[in-house]
Image (cartoon, rainbow, N blue to C red; front, side, top):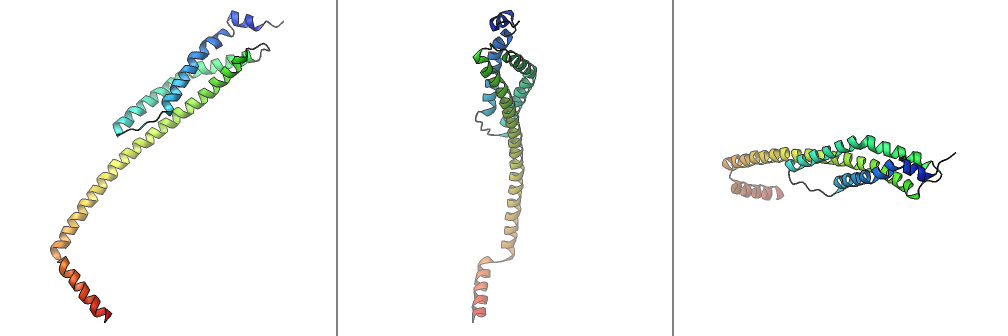
Length: 166
């Protein structure tokens, strides 16, 4: 004897799936949006703040993992029933794909933020190195100017070229 789907819904077998899917989908949508929106950090401190937020987002995703897996499992069980509601398959698929995509995007965003932080740090270090190299080069130019008269050197070069070309 197979019980009708209405009985399943009324006795609570399908009700948790229906009741829990909306907040779960909303949670996934919010997390997905925060992991894919445009960002333009202006300094390493901003990147640190964004990394902290992204790590919190990933932590929230991890804490919801069991709820999502349970919800998907319950949905798949209900989907085996011949009188399943038509909307349920789309909901289960949306939650499953939404979970996978949101988790992937959140991890990619964290990786990108860490790479951005490394770039900021590398830029700052290289910027200091370049400035130091310019200072050294300027000192070298000053030394060369003291030892040699550059205007006389140009005149001397012209004389030597004239002699060589004759």
